[in-house]
Image (cartoon, rainbow, N blue to C red):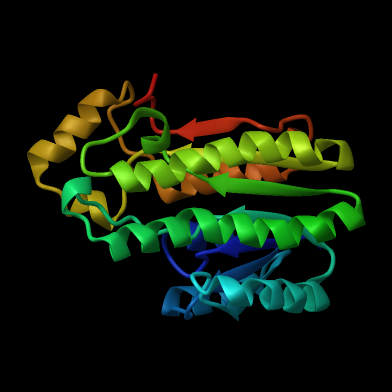
Length: 243
């Protein structure tokens, strides 16, 4: 059974991915600060599937503790086949009005933390002779969006990180890719006023929001053998909004 680390695996997209991976026969290792009722349910559900789900608590914003976290994961789940850097903050706000601590927190969790985590995980992948890394970016890192300049900067940085790391480690059998979701059918978009929802939908040729299961399926594909010759790419799942 292949072991895949999923950061931010207790809710939203991370939880959908954990469930998807367990159903596909992977051992999904959900990393989050705390568990949720939904994650506990996914752990129980996985007992009836071909895969498994485990929860490992960790605050990825605490950069100094990441090396010890990876050491613990390696000892318990070796070898680590996959890493999905999904955890992120979605704080919005005009740059001129954001506080410096807000900006620093966004960059720390959305950019610095996944880079440091990948550094320690990829060392083990290199020693084991291969692996898969998927970084969750966003279409805001490709197109920009008013009020999301800092968030967009962090997501754009993950795209550059993906492409360069793919070249660094490809010869060692490690594939590195990114998935860039658009606005998803989640609580956030459901809470929008109707004119704003319709404005976003009009940008999409398919006139709908992708759901978290759509993005989870795309990540699952990049982790699979079917994607063994795909690396350094950005797969957008946005119902065509950036077409």
